[in-house]
Image (cartoon, rainbow over all chains, first blue to last red; front, side, top):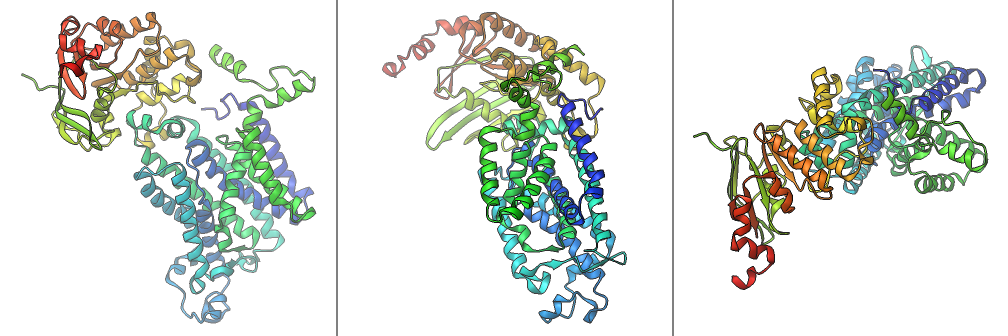
Length: 375
Length: 250
């Protein structure tokens, strides 16, 4: 089936052409520092895609995606630490020495393997999300209670990681920028350039994957669960399984995202599991456009880029701007920016300022429905 | 003698002391069309909730195809062949008419099958057939939320038929429909009986009369009277219940 066959096809296609053109040309005009930032934000777009799947499509507002994000980051960081700790005493990462630990904790062992690490980055968060999700969904906990529960889980994980110096260096986190990968320093320009490309490619792959999930009846069941879960049940579907699967997928995406973010920011720490950060993920999706997938990517990248630009110019003002942006979008553009554009918002603005546009340029609902009925 | 398709035995449902259903007995044979009427609060909807697994009865048993349904999950009961139409139309408003029906006709209803396989030709034909039964062919790509009230009712009935259940439980299918639509709905339900077993709940007497089938009158959680529409309408007890004079008589 043609992936661009929906009624929103034109806008999606145009946005993708622009995104890919920007990604390809970015390394040639952005300084290394900016390129690295862009790479980080592209990796954040992957966790935002997961949030869109569970919130935008399935209607479950998770405030705990930071758990899975951080787990992915820790997996990557543990591997990198082990990979470059050969010259340290006992052959274990340096920080262990500070706490008098001489033997590697058992759960670090498998992370000596690069293959295990590459799998666990997404599989471990996905399994934990699946288990947590199954228990919650089986007991029919939803709505606000689900949100509170995920936030509580986030705090549990935060406090655990924060307190375990002897296991994972506690509040200090694990540094990755001075570690080695393929004989190169992870924080070096050439490695970071590679991570930028990997992030860019994985964002696109993640989008295709998410698009594939929601494209047909599976996605329709998710929307059905969001809109009327009992009806889904009486139609003969078990919502628990669907919710568990999609929550697990979102967890896996968060893990990949966290790993990429970690290697590009140079450190993973329990700060990834703070409450505001997980809420920010939701804001990216809300601003970009719930249930649009592409909106999640755009929201994550643009809000974070704006954050870094604003923070450089006016250090104290970002939180106010972000809060204001969120309130503005929720009240004025409840479908998010992309949802608003798809519903013909731009055309309305052009009309208001006196520039009439031909209908074909920004297809509205009616035109397309006719077009589809005719075909 | 073959065993009945559905048998309710001495069902009682108590909500914190309030008896919504009281020793309710009901038997439906294969191919039956049965109407259930009753004043507001007689327990009509609760009675459907018990069959579909939404409410667990305090006492009694529900036997469907010779097996008890008590304690089963809603989606399992649905898969065993009991379809339900809700009182107010409940369709997936953000999906198109066709997508709504696709979810109803899909089988098996497992995540993997929905994700990996697209609908086969015979299922697509089935969707077309369902849309033609309820006159929605021209609306197949329209968002279901944009349909009129009557069309939503019909879409939900079509979804119910698409599930291909042995037993259809239809709760107030003609609420808010025009007379013409009501007649069409009655004909549709009559045509479904035979292949399916249909249980209709409503309090539109003209509609029930048009169904031309045995009627059970429910009152205060109990079956007051069973019989044809004519018998029912002549019965003094039923008249009292409907005219609200029962308190004096009791």
